[in-house]
Length: 364
Image (cartoon, rainbow, N blue to C red; front, side, top):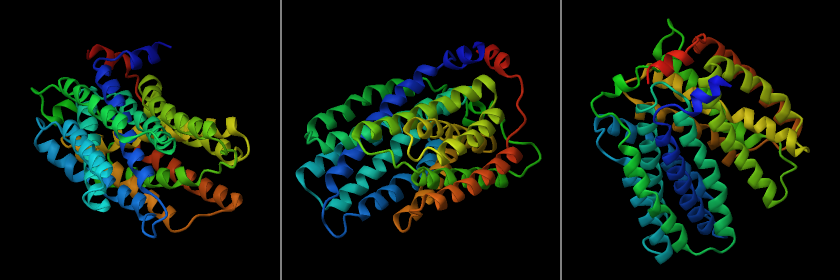
């Protein structure tokens, strides 16, 4: 319990909660617009694929830019761009794909803003970026529901605008007297003696697997709106819990336990919602761990490090647009093989846990 209290009450955790709301608002407006735009047109099925490509992949470049220009408030820039895109969608001008591109770039800027703030002010804790990223899962389902229930554009646009003061406030938590390398110096979670390139590739592969498996989880039980909401809420809780438990009990123990324990719940929860949700929560907990591994070898480039994880997510979701395994047995076999692969990689590239709670607490 002491470890959990230290993780939840750490210095600058308020910045993470500010970006939890910003990320929530970001995904609300993005998935509201996506849901409203996808219709019966022959080419509208491309919208989600284009969205994933231009919202995820450019984050590495934007992150590198923000690493070089730390005073650039990418969170505010992103919120302004997404608001403009929603207005253009509402006014039906310019072309839909041009407006979608503006929405995607705005999303990418806001994500990098959250990564830069939470990583730079976290003193090596995983709970900060984990809480920030968790807000997105709640926003995705909220945006879809608002669009499906005919809510007009204006309340969603106002929600996005309401996040701008939060982005301005969150930016004040960054210690501008420290370079990115100094701010991220406490991220030392990668195994010593392993090449940084190997760490980055292996961590990105784990993200790719997580992105793919996220769409392949058997969920025959998901038949109502309430069940869908429960699924996304559980994902969000799992993402936040992964960082919090890693700070409290150790990153390697959390990674190995969450990935290994998730598999049986995912495989046998196809027709049992509660069993499946336990697996989803455990499965989601590795999100902040892969980010921490890449930051550990790219201390001076936290934005670029975050960008590697989003590229991995994109690569993991691409196959879903072209083929899926419909048989439960096939899905289970694939999940088992991929999980074992991830467990082996994590066992190799994650540093042995140390008793670090007291050390982190004394740093504040």
